[in-house]
Length: 102
Image 1 (cartoon, helix red, strand yellow):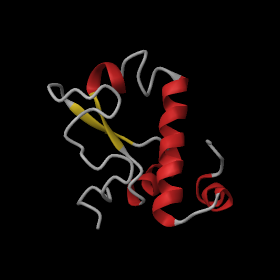
Image 2 (tube, rainbow, N blue to C red):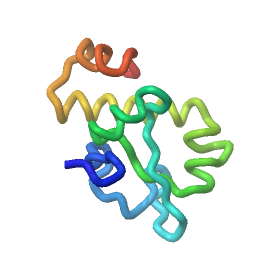
Image 3 (tube, rainbow, N blue to C red):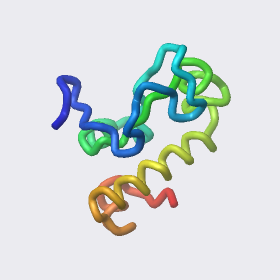
């Protein structure tokens, strides 16, 4: 069941009280969808999101929006979680999100 902002519970991170990347709890946390743009709503509806501390893990140069390798790793984690949760094959995932990240 999605919340009022369209987010289904995360299938990647069950405990969203800490940063998915660094584990810190003492900073502002932001929701991050690994698939943005036209896929953002699908990401939210399928629970493919994590929480990241605002800086440095979300907005910093070594975070999700600054480091392509971090972004790729988050997309791969989302794909693994979706395939496990929904019983999707790689082909199913590609049909939904356009690309294989594994």
